[in-house]
Amino acid sequence: MSDDDLWNAIEAADLCTMATIKKDGRPQLSDVSYTADPGTRTLRISTRAGLAKVHNLRRDPRASIRVGPPGGGYVAAEVTASLSAPSAAEDDATVEELVDIYRLIANKDHPDWADYRRAMVADGRLVLSLHVERMYGWVVG
Image 1: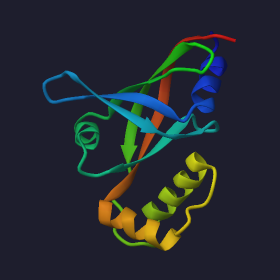
Image 2: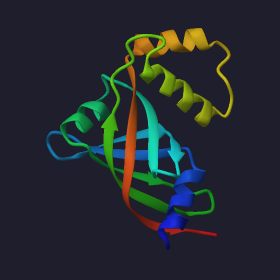
Image 3: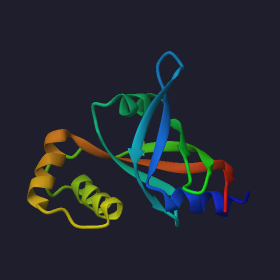
Image 4: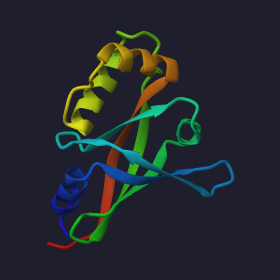
């Protein structure tokens, strides 16, 4: 399969399983919703600063994702992660990016943006960016 076919399957989905590397070398798996940027082949995820995947990625930014396309098959991608600063104020750059991610994943506006912004700061949310380096797999269709 071509990289374009594999990327198209990643871009068409919005949920993947992500594997990060724990201290003992074993994988830690998380199901995450994402938005995909075709121009940079980057996935963006909203997550909380205190979660295991964040701790793992701060120690080792390598990860893998797996997407199950609707028609069958799978796409796996090796990625390198970068993390934004945790949200600290309702109008900071991280919260603005989290608003953008919400809109792209939900395909709608939040019913109460002020409440959403407060929750992002209270949760210590940040943006996890996954830069796709290599893809493999197969897709039906």
